[in-house]
Amino acid sequence: MSAVSDFRSRAEGPRASTGRVEVVGLGPGPERWLTPEASEALEQASDVIGYRAYTARIAPRAGQTVHGSDNGDELVRARHALELASTGRRVAVVSGGDPGVFAMASAVFEAIERGPLAWRALDVRVLPGVTAMLAAAARLGAPLGNDFCTINLSDNLKQWSVIESRLSLAAQADFVIALYNPASSARPEQVHRAFAILRGLRAASTVVVFAKAIGRPDEQVVLGTLGEADPGQADMRTLLLIGASRTRLIERTGQAPWVYTPRYVEPSPAPSAAARFDETP
Amino acid sequence: MSAVSDFRSRAEGPRASTGRVEVVGLGPGPERWLTPEASEALEQASDVIGYRAYTARIAPRAGQTVHGSDNGDELVRARHALELASTGRRVAVVSGGDPGVFAMASAVFEAIERGPLAWRALDVRVLPGVTAMLAAAARLGAPLGNDFCTINLSDNLKQWSVIESRLSLAAQADFVIALYNPASSARPEQVHRAFAILRGLRAASTVVVFAKAIGRPDEQVVLGTLGEADPGQADMRTLLLIGASRTRLIERTGQAPWVYTPRYVEPSPAPSAAARFDETP
Image (cartoon, rainbow over all chains, first blue to last red; front, side):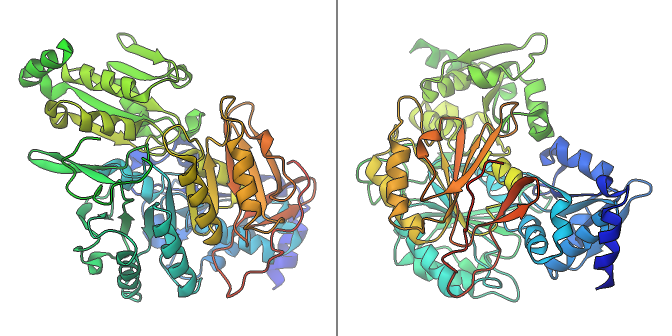
């Protein structure tokens, strides 16, 4: 790759110190969840790189180049950003949510690890954001109020057996479980298999929530139970939450119930704790 | 409690619709991580309620009442907020980080569940924020780049046996583990016991990170290995990260290494993935 020797020589030149990669979390969508730090990075960037669905959210300023790409190989996008930064550009790599949670940050460091040593001298920063699970939790109440785990259900980059094992151990640990990427048109089956595993280990009354496109105009929240919910309603814009044994609803008149998980854990959680929720602790 | 009947009658009056509780995440500290939504809620609130360490961060506007309290019973604070909202006040309950992660949101819903039915008609909203683990991860690189879990190491509200079991299952699942509240002056021992459990289940070379006061002027990051790190350096301002088997460092000349966890999981992870790290960044 001739580009490599190219940027190497430039990295030693005077413009090198101005080159930078900022891996920016856009949050789940609305401006109200975009941090001031992220806004400033987008404002200052000479180049914005990302999946087109995310770059489309940004109103580019004059002189700024937006490189929207398909939802393809994140490593290609990461290398592109590092190459541009090596020539002195200030590059914002954008992700939805938080860039460190199943998004571009890990791809950027993977590219650096596999790339030329000069990339390790670049100014690379990750700017945190509100990840989907926090936005969904806030919308619902406080379902993550006790210990929880976060699993990417896609088996594009890991074996299904690893996911199965993690689901099983997480269910045994009585974690609230947040599932990212539960399904897509290319992977409709995994979420059904995940439900089959969880149904064998958790009570049928366990609260489950399908939180779709939280914060977007077409936001949708569906509450159900592990025993009865149809996993097929999950899609690639869904964050799926599986409650712990004590996760429960607070019923309201004329409004959707709140969902919350108490902070305390009693010696032996009542098996029916997730059931009807008319009891007060 | 006469306050109860008090707010009940007022809740039916004309001011009821203006009463509101917003549970606001302040993020880990700096303004650059405070969402516009949270800023606006703080600006609009008639009353701000929270642990003094958090309310001290807020410059109150004219006419706003700040109720700073000790780091005591969160339920008392939650009830106070709900009572004020019942009289028509617009109350911001503030938490560091994200309010849904081991913070005030769960306490507010617990208070509602145990409280008078009228509280269920109140306008209660949770505003998400950047939680400590996301800020720490961003500061380090991308350590949460694969599946992870989040455990509160305090046994104030749950039995130690529950924590032990969760640690053990999380280690077996090869999650990256984020530990909140790893230690305090009243609870110095738990983090030592946690390390003992993890040392029995994970390689000695596993990456561990003590991330203290991230984003604050006295921020400090200490990298080490599970086998050699001293758990005693954790305190109540520390977010402790225990890497997965594939979590590793990217060495840099003259700078602290980056820490990241690859997105992919190979059939059998290399046991030595977490290599060496005796230094402090």
